[in-house]
Length: 51
Image (cartoon, rainbow, N blue to C red; front, side, top):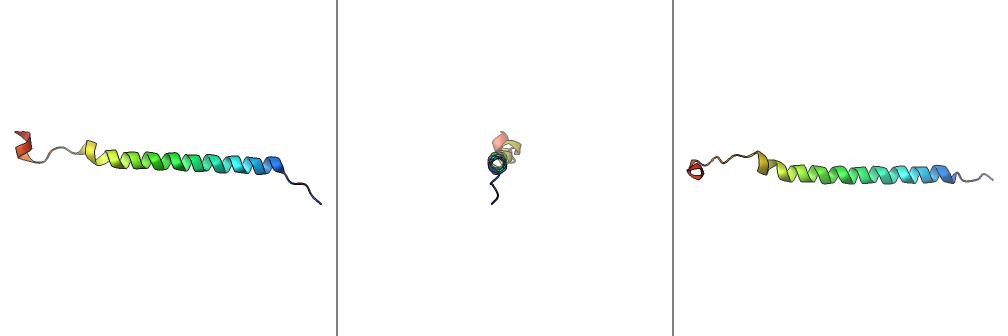
């Protein structure tokens, strides 16, 4: 009967956690830039607003 390679399993779990955390971080960044993008880049187009 063979033994389990616990260090390899732990390493795989750590990699999965890091990947999940990175995806979560990227998702938050994408959401933040998507919400901030249209507001900051628009200039007023209404000539009445410029007066």
